[in-house]
Every structure is written in C-alpha cells, then in structure tokens.
Length: 167
Ligand SMILES: [Fe+2]
Ligand SMILES: [Fe+2]
Picture (spheres, rainbow, N blue to C red):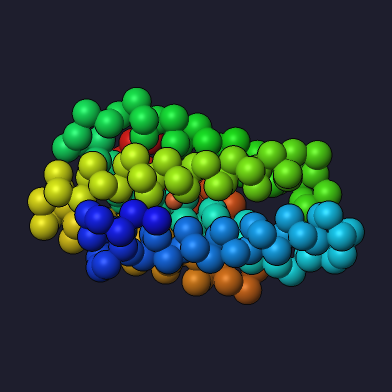
C-alpha cells in the first residue's frame, strides 16, 4: 500500500484507505462464495452499501477538491466512470453476470486511487479543502445512517439531499 506520502496516516484519505481495506476483504469473501457456490447475500449487501457510500464520499469530497487544485481531472473522470460501472454491474445482485468483473475492477480501481491519485493530492490541497472533504464525508454518512433501516437507499435520494457540485 501507499506508505510513503502519509495518506494512510490521518484525515479523510486514511478514512478512505480503511474503507478500501474493508471493501477488499468483503470482495475476497464474495469471490470465495461465488467459487464455492455458498450463500453470501448478507455480505453482498454490506459490500454494496459500503461501496456506494465510499464512492459518494469520493465524488462529493476528495474528487471535487482534487479536480479544482490539480491537473488530474481526466484521471478522476475515469475513476468516476468506474464507480458507475461498479454500481451497474452490482445492481442485479450477487448472481449478476458481471459481478466477477466488478470484483476484479474494484481491485485495480483501489490500486489506482491509492498509488496514482492520493499521493498526488495529499500535498496539493489546503487545510480548508481537507476540512470541507471531512464535512462531505460526515454528510454522506448521515444520509447513509438515516437510511440504515430501509432498503430503498438509492442515488436519487442522495442527489436530492446533497448538492452534487460536479463529477
Ligand atoms: Fe473510487
Ligand atoms: Fe476509493
């Protein structure tokens, strides 16, 4: 993992990195379940929920500020397109035909973020940017917590409640 720039040590990037670790663990478990044909419905639900929350944090927090402060816009747009692919490929449940593709894509997506993106961002943003990213993370979590007991969390609801600055 990226241990050189300090992005895993504190603040919003360490929060994202911890979520990456959990997503990779859950992805591994799902991979095993698909291979062994065991029931992993609950793990899949946890995985999809965490991935959606995590991607929302990135898209309204870090990515917005990184786009404004670095020349990494094209790379960030590509990562957002991968988020869309992941959400689409996972939308049909664990038995969906592209779930294995999604699990593979997630691994390279996280590597790209941790090795090619975070190290370039960590010194490019101001303290105010990091404060706003932190606030964005808390706002996303508040929405996700509120919808904890329901199964109807979707992007529409998030769109209505958090202004999407841009993707
Ligand atoms: Fe991402
Ligand atoms: Fe990520």
